[in-house]
Image (cartoon, rainbow, N blue to C red):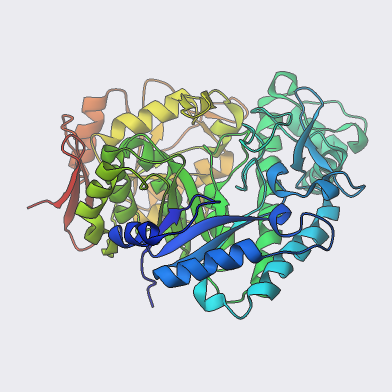
Length: 532
């Protein structure tokens, strides 16, 4: 049975509630209100537990006809009580760049597992008789704000050492890296042969920055471990939450660009979430539909393929024009939850939202016949960023070559982004053609799978004037692949394969459903409509 779509509002945390609040929620058809529930809010002193503030909020939401989504946050600086931060069991992330602690609990701190269970159980026990008033749970496991992410920008609520970088220099992280390497390679001789190193034993192995990486292979492998550690932490949270709430909808909060330093792995997270019937809340909405296709619709590729669900959040609110682009991305991704901060006091945003509100209940089943390969190994190695995050103007996004390529191609045709995890899960059987960027780096097992895809009748196009490389730096030979250097030639080849393409940019973006109907978004006129 399909769940109804949710319109989720990010509420002002200390806001007074009034008749105006009721009218506002009703005017946009809100179904759910999210508020932050931090450990520090309910247990500011050891054993002094107080839910009165949240009880009042829940009473108001019930009166206004909306349900509650508590964002349960434990681990970030602003969510962790001072008395735990100052305790002997506190253990912070520590950066490789400066050898300094963050204010955020390390995900390798096993002593933080007991407080996490304690926090979740406090909430469970207090609201066990009111769960019918709670729509879903949002899990805030790490990072600056609660996402499944490493520290990168700091938090508005406090100051601590933070920056974009690698946060795996605490003693527990170093020990885990050594255990991982020993499990992966068995002997130090095998590790040295793979990485081009001369370690005497595993006791010499420790995380490194790219400028100190012994080889590209070593850096790529380290980032696999780094991302995997965050997934392990996410699984701990989901396992504990499911013990308490076996059937309640819940989302793993994920944000960020998927870069090496931030440490997310959206496709692998989708597979893991499906194991626990948990969805993903993606907080990356900003800018335009091309950006959304790269950084948010791609999350839905993973959740849809794995049979789970997702919600989309705007990281800092929407303009009147951007809200329509967000709605289009939500519809074509078959997302379950639409979260927005910027309705309150923004009449034009509300007006545009209400124009297309009914479209959001569509059960649109997108059918993209083309996919573009987004190499995990490439992003593990190339750490530059294509853009900046508006609020704090810090480097953000994928490296410039893939960011610009995905942005340009979305003008001309609809496609799914697929990475190594999805290719290994056999997602390519869903597509007629796979475009491989010529600048990319490809793992050996992925090369083998691409050759098998071609042998089974699929088409691989290597696009650009270069030759893809293996992680070890050798030419990545894809038997049967078609090499194309120019955009016009690529579009003609896709047309010949049966892909719907536009040879010229016109500001109208299309997505075809499995029933053959085509939904359109007009960027210039900010409207959504069916193609006739």
